[in-house]
Length: 209
View 1 (cartoon, rainbow, N blue to C red):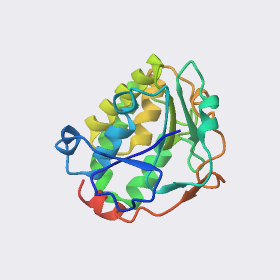
View 2: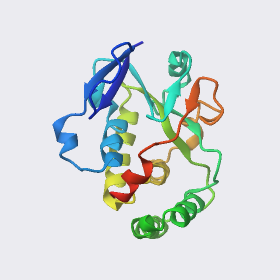
View 3: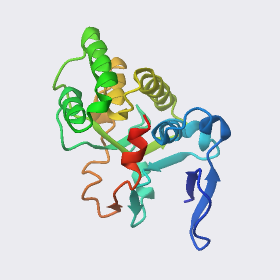
View 4: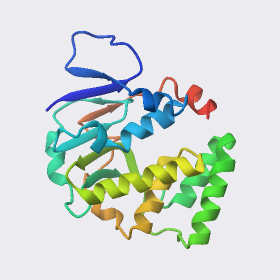
């Protein structure tokens, strides 16, 4: 198993199993917003890891504590992706309300996004969200690539930069039951394989949106 870190920062530890790779110039030129840059890497594993059969995306605030390679066995072949279920809210409308309350400067984009979703007929309480901090992908699966492409397009269109909202809507549009994706079970908050740390630059990044 190879450990690969995409970053725009210099290598800070020579004694590490992580292979440092620079974020491509086209991604750096896409936006100064770190959230957008990270989201591109998250939603384009087929581009960044074409030489592999599987990839496991792990957010930068999560520390891997033990072997996670067995997670590839939990991928449902009908969708080619696996995630943890999101335990905190039952639907995107509730989640959106909580985000707007905590970060009112994001309200404009989110309200437009949800207005469109309602117009499209996206219902309330049809199943929970996914934790997008960990994503296992079968890189040979065409359905997974289709989901990623639609997810990225929706994420960028609304400029609310809340990837969970976009993903849940896209799965509904593609008629994919979330249970086919949330096959990792549990959650990242209490997984013995992961240790959660705070995003030290989260406030700065969000203020740059």
